Image (cartoon, rainbow, N blue to C red; front, side, top):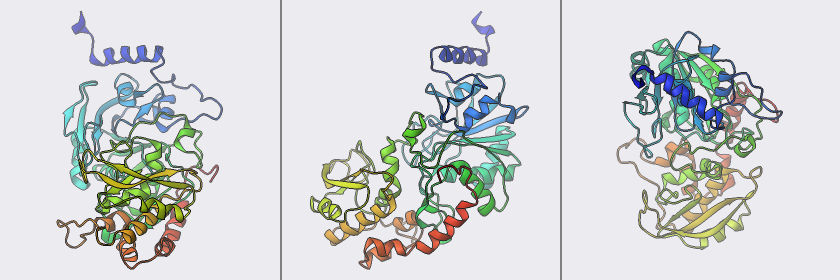
Length: 427
């Protein structure tokens, strides 16, 4: 008799079983507890998917598309007759998260749901629009946990997907999630058009202080030549001063080198070390918190602690990365500790780290040079959005002087950002 059961019926039975054991999602329409947070996908489900009723839907997502109970939204949607989910679109690292940095899973059929999974990584414009058309969807949904930094590429997957949806004549729905490092303010240098890449398509600041839903509104109004038919399904209960732990949501690694919320808080600053010959801690258990090189030593931590940077401390650290830069080589350096998140400025801290290590090791420190892009050969310029940070540090400027170099552009972006904020409480 097993052949009489459809795959959707079997999945639906599994979803009900998980719900009965606490592994599913709250029934549609259930109200959140007082002070509780509900993400955009939960709000969509609370409304029995009426927002996409009668439409063939696809979703751009990855392992972070999680629901309370630690079940993935695609597994639940695939089993629910109230929504016609016909396709999944996988970003960098893939839908199920099987690929490392700079990789994806390619087109395949998902073993768990039977859904086709289309690879969107490094796809944009008409090429991505053609994928949306080929998939047969009417509406493209987006639900990926961001990390709060301009060079975290999922927000540019969002941008490219919005652009492609507009080209393909598809509706676009963003299922909003929290900014894990709060949404209090924007920080850092602003991208300039000459240095636009997949780690920064448009003129936003290095730490943007926005949710993906707010970014979608900003992209649509400020940057897209052809705006998308956009709907943002807003969260309920999120406030701008919330760190991720305050939300009550489970943390799912949005990428292999973003293991904890602590990593996310450090990342907008220490990711700049990708633009140097120091290890940014990839290949260790504390990426973006352990920073070092074979030439660095205990003096770096001493120099940084002497600066008394707000909300942070450093200890001398020694580590051997298992992959990436300096793989299998002993590195000296520092471990960054965030002691007060409200006082901590990740970008200014990262600049101070760059300034001090360059001064301590002028003969060894080097900026990473990209021979494949002779017009823009320094990777740090792509990360920070212009040559300003690199040239100011090379000129011997102090961290405050480097920060002053982007103050005007940051002020202008902050004013633009303000127009597109959705969540006002606690701002």
